[in-house]
Image (cartoon, rainbow, N blue to C red; front, top):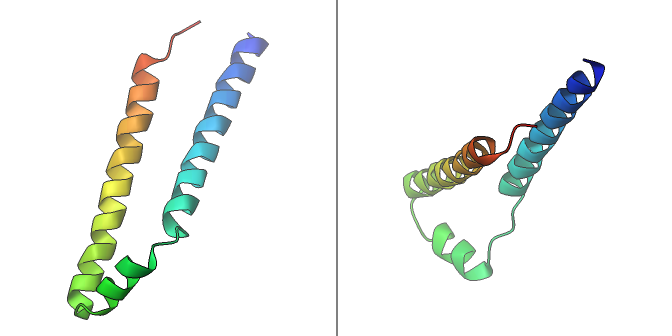
Length: 76
């Protein structure tokens, strides 16, 4: 019984750490200078739309990866 609790806790710790790593990588990522120049030349409304799109695409990719990992994993 105790071993099951330890493995369950360890899985949650890994899941939370991966989520935090994904959020940090997405938030503090460095873009290329050409994209930065192109984005600065656009109006503020378009810049805000780009920021929302980046979060939407990154969140969708992370959610699909996590769902696939949880779906495919093997119960022991």
